[in-house]
Image 1 (cartoon, rainbow, N blue to C red):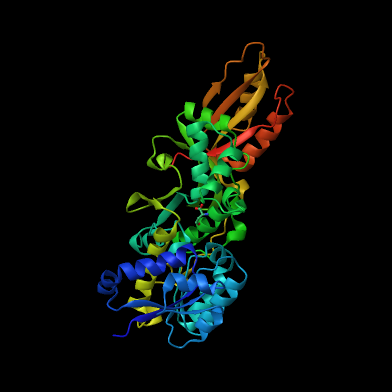
Image 2: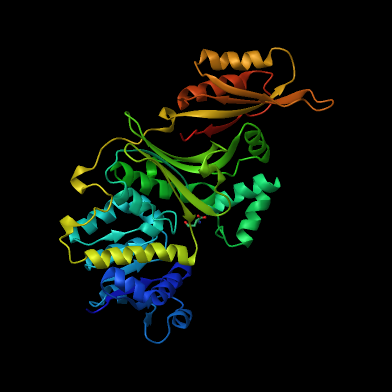
Length: 436
Ligand code: HSE
């Protein structure tokens, strides 16, 4: 049978990895897919560079629309990124009847509803394994492997740059700014690392996982997003003394009131496997009613790990493209007419536990006043740590771990504690998840 023909829109890091792995493992891939899969066209603005990667047998063009217009191309792989031209080209490819594979989490998290609806109408597939956690087959696991389950929550380290920064801060006692420079020099962080360090990249990925896990539309605009830029090394040290590590987690939970969808730094018990995921690695924990807790670990970025995910999608499409669209796996795991309208909860309604650090005057009654405010708010304390005041110091740090409470209540308690004349600096609050 004639090989399935693929056109790549963009041949940067992921595109060149995809081309290379498809070539290297072509025999094995064909045995799995039942048919060859060949990149026959590439569009890239740097035609000379693209030609040097793919050689003379692949047609290289500088206009992506030439790929979309080519009737021989079965699958378009979008590796441009961003919401601009990438969105336009994906919609045009769908309109032209092409199946689409994309690694573009930003595009799908923000415009997924429109894109999946267009694909559904046209009867084509939009596959996006590479958009979440690079080489880890988490989309496949959530959408198919766990299909028997009622999924209750998921929590993931889904941004390698921030995990690298947090690991280095903890290991070497370095500041955030120092490690960020190192991450950029190593090529982990983007030249403009804002999406990484502000939690936006993780929130794009959490949004996609949440939609598939719970059968709700992609709703990036409802996600709570907090990055790691304000995190201080001293909190990493105090957390460690209390038996916790701080990780940037993407979390989504199903509650009776709605879906929690949030990205923020989080204390995690040091004994959990996920707390020991270091450097640029990614990991996702999923808790579901039948299977219990499962953990998926691997490289969340990089040329061949991400190519591995892109090619898995190419194989899936190759196997299914002749199937009746109604018999294919739905884009968001649930049938489009069976989506839930469970709302995404505002952060004030989220229930979690907390780490608080207060810089307080080292004098009688301070602890009683602080704990009194928490008691009045019905917030139960789990542990307290007080740093011994240094020689000649008249202040100290008070660290409090709480049990679960609703965020609105904690906001009020923090505001009240902040008013105390013995609380000398803005209170640090970091959320905590036991993940058990
Ligand atoms: N910038 C991302 C990360 C890479 O650091 O994980 C892939 O999304």
